[in-house]
Amino acid sequence: MIKIVVGDIETSTDLLVIGAGPGGYTAAIRGAQKGLDVVLVDKEKLGGTCLNRGCIPAKALIHASKFHKEIQDWHEIGIEAECENIDFSKIMSWKDSVVEELNSGLKHIIEREGIEVMKGEARFIDEETVRVSEEHNAENVNFDKAIIATGSRPVEIQGIEFDNDKIISSRKLLNLDEVPEELVVVGGGYIGMEAATKFSKFGTDVKIVEAEERILQNFDEDIVDEIKESGPEYSDEIYTSAKASGFRYENDKILLEAETEEDEIEIRGDYILVAVGRTPRPVLDNLDLNNTDVEVKDGFIEVDDKLRTSQENIFAIGDCIGQPMLAHKAYREGRVAAEVASGEASAFDNQYIPKAMYTDPEVATVGMSLDEARKEFDDVLVGEFPFRASGRSLTINQESGFVRVVASGDEKLQGVQIVGSRASDMIAEATLALEMQAYLDDIINTIHAHPTFPEAFAEACEDARDEAIHI
Ligand code: FAD
Image 1: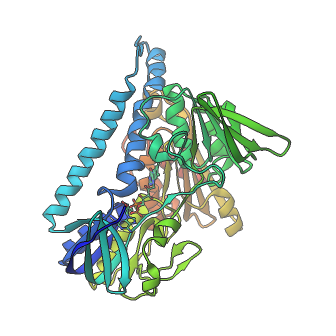
Image 2: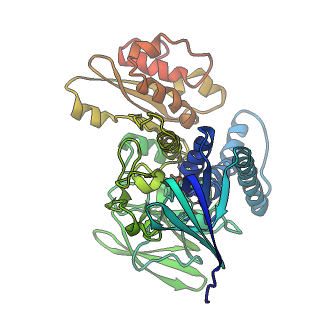
Image 3: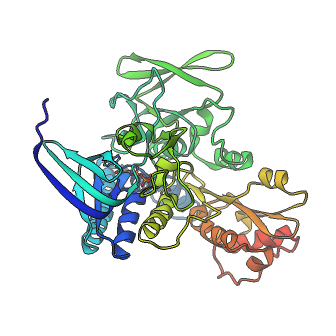
């Protein structure tokens, strides 16, 4: 199709933000709060990956899939409820409504702050101009400062490329019309494991194929064991050290071909979900960065602690600048970049970025793992508190998991790992404690409300000094 560019309009702004995900929209709002005139460009919907096709829809579906476990819990405590049917299309509509509600809230805030939103794909013409194109229209935007927040895309496996039919990414998985009978998940990282968690609970027979020796390489082995032990049934079909190499169709099914150390295996599914990581590479290629001095190294834009690229007036934030590719890292970077762009002496000086994974049980970690601490310090203190000893846990009939704290010999907190029902909420206190350079004493002497989950964090700190009261 020939694209005709109608008119050649030109706009000028103090701050241009490219990409309206968690990084970009935060930067735009913060820039406007600081009095800058802001233009925010996105080729898709406001909210980016996280709101439209990542964190939010994924967690809504994980919540919906919990009915299974909750019904078992109710039976155990004497409530005889049965689930007769799940209406998957209604669940998907509810999930969409959650996304829509957050989307319209975001739109309202952006309008209130007087931010100009432009729909279209941005490409740099030079270090002060981008061209924003959509369909038959194109517009040049001149800027004093720009922030690149263009996110990332799922990595493809050569020979098993996405076809948006049976070989799919997480985006399509979150929009299926019906619960598949069988699902092959290639990649045992957090996106793959969260997908496995919810679909196995909806009744799908989930099989996980992981090239490394074990799933969830970024988490301690005992955490992974805890998930396998108390999590859903997919743990019976985890193929590790198995490299996905091809596929073939059989009737209406698709078979993933994989090579293990001993064998070649075939694993059947209605879909193959490829979740082997994300990369900003294709997104950056489309930006024409070669028309600026912005440098890209190993696939990521290089920035300093003020989020400035090698082109002085251009900043970059979020997934496109590196790991960990997480929304809360992007939020913080968006705030800092906008503040620096407005002339404030701000910097990304955070030392700790928590990670949360919504498997069953949930996992959340921050700071050093036990192994990392042992490599770093001669003397390491470890404290652990199991949720089976927590009054709050028992009152909701949940016993699995633990809180572990790792401290250096001088009792300074160095890391926290939590496995259990409210791990993703509990990690906030641990992150604050680490950022504030807390010692075990600081947590122990803080009164924690009773009965609550965070009491387990304080008791784990007590345990590191052999002083726990409830174990
Ligand atoms: P994005 O959110 O990817 O936004 C980038 C935006 O830029 C997009 O809207 C895109 O359309 C736009 N864009 C790109 N190029 C151009 C261009 N040239 N012109 C105009 N617009 C452009 N993170 C968490 O912290 N917690 C979670 O629980 C979590 N769960 C996830 C679950 C899934 C299934 C997935 C896929 C991701 C999840 N993430 C989670 C990761 C999180 O979504 C990302 O880290 C986050 O969205 C990155 O934010 P960003 O602002 O850098 O980019």
